[in-house]
Image 1: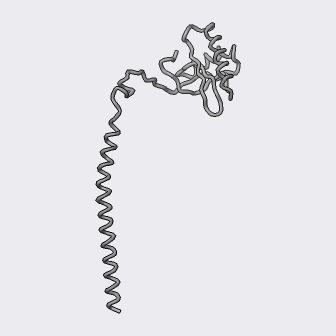
Image 2 (image 1 turned 135 degrees about the horizontal axis):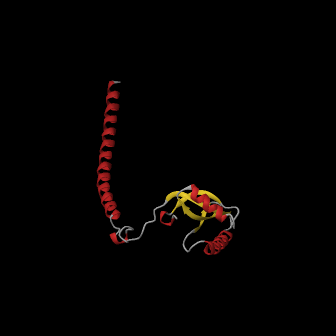
Image 3 (image 1 turned 120 degrees about the vertical axis):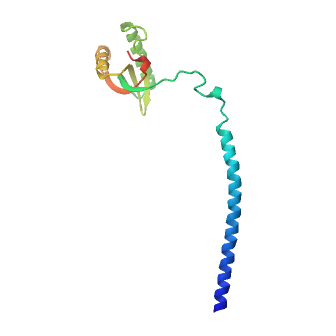
Length: 152
């Protein structure tokens, strides 16, 4: 019985030693590959030339802020929204100075929305909405992201 226990103990020791050696070989292989992979990643992450970065192109970045716009239409048909936008632009060009009000067709599933204006305060947006309601009676003030350069 004692010899059987010794034999089992020896087998267990040999088995765990073999696993340990296999794991250390796998660990060495993993370390060697990990270093190579890290080098490849570092090379790839720096491959974008500075000339192609948005900052170096000198493009103006548009800063958006929370504000208010007037919604004049809500529809599922993009052609109808574009037509309504053109109708508003024609009317606004006769009523307001050039480039006074901007029109946007926005898509938020499943609707296309026609928004006009960029306002920081609800009061100014409401004043403008009252003028717009003369021609577009369903107009109402909505919270939206505005373009600060276009605020009047």
